[in-house]
Image (cartoon, rainbow, N blue to C red):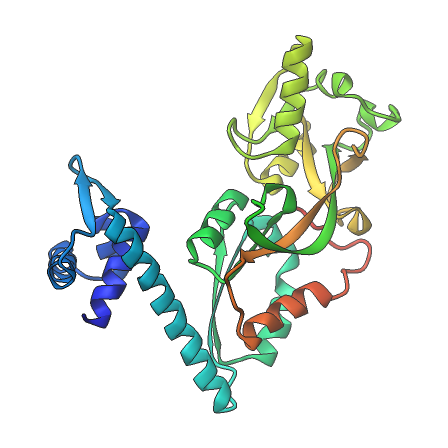
Length: 307
């Protein structure tokens, strides 16, 4: 059994496609197919079966070999980290994923502090939606990610970072700013800027669930999965929208926006570091989490935590 065969099988099984695995490993589909065939001959069992022309499915033996491959690759990674540490070197790889707004507003200062402390660590920072972050964590493709705690499955490990609350974004002077305790019925009277249907969002699910149940008509003027984009069109006066924000970091500097608290309608949430429960972080990886979580919040008037 060759090392490259283990890597190739892991990529094919993880991606479910010889085409995508070939792209990921910079090899030809033919080379990958030959390696898998050689593995099956050596182990005297079928590891993969084709379903139709393009789909692949692991056999029972393939599931067992995938667990072996994952354990072997993870063990090799830990060995390299331990050998570097034994040499007094904080050297290795750190792969993190988070939503755009979290990376844009919150990551720069802790990342800069980390890079100064660990200049030899090779970083990979991925801009991904929260569902994508969680999927990457599940697959073991990243060391950890950042997502709202309410969206994270119970079988993943969570470390709370920042408390966040739901606010309604409106232009300054909007009639709802004088309404006191805003109700869903009052919000529904204005054009709404909401995430796309099917996008994991407490705001849209709660609002439309209530409106549909009560038979209240409403108009979605724009669909946007990015709170930064939504805020621009709220400023323009196109409609009102929702934002998940750390309340101690409001208001937004230089933006023509008002934020109406919706704590009566939405429970508070937490932005959290998420990782697999079986994930063991090397000291230099743990250091990033420590810098991130222990770093004091930005002074009032700076950009807020938006996820």
